[in-house]
Image (cartoon, rainbow, N blue to C red; front, side):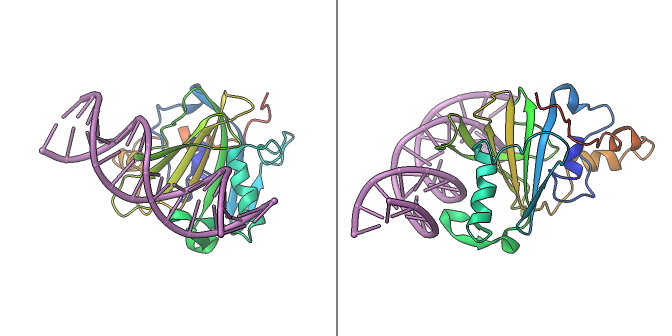
Length: 188
DNA sequence: CGACTTTGACCAGCGC
DNA sequence: GCGCTGGTCAAAGTCG
């Protein structure tokens, strides 16, 4: 998930995948939204705004957040200011897999059916000690070939893949850093 | 045996 | 005030 270097992973210094890993074989990025300090930006190429107009759960979170004074509901419904929560990043990817390996280790802690989506939403926490990053994953209700992933928080540790990479200084990083191409404009 | 997943229950915010 | 909803917890079950 090369794009995660810039959007999924809140920490842009991290890279996820070893050279021989080509996530694009398994899915393609269709849209991504990035939410930061109450402002989310989308890929401004031609395709539609992924989700907020389509009533998708992930983007509903965004519109909900922005319409609720940029606050985010946290643990047990406690509302926090975005600045307390940290980064929030929403992706829409075309993938057969619901759970994409972004290089971090996630632990599932909940599953919930949500009103706006026929598909259940899955909740994951980063299983690294002391890291409080969470992510939600759900299938696009409109097009089940798409998966909506929402990351909340910033990892305070390296990706295991990054550690792996650091051990191989001879590997050419360009081989995969250059994969950070703009999201596909063809969301079909 | 430890780590992980599943799943129902619980809690708090929001709208009516 | 009540009901709905989303998010989290925690016990039980599963797997390597």
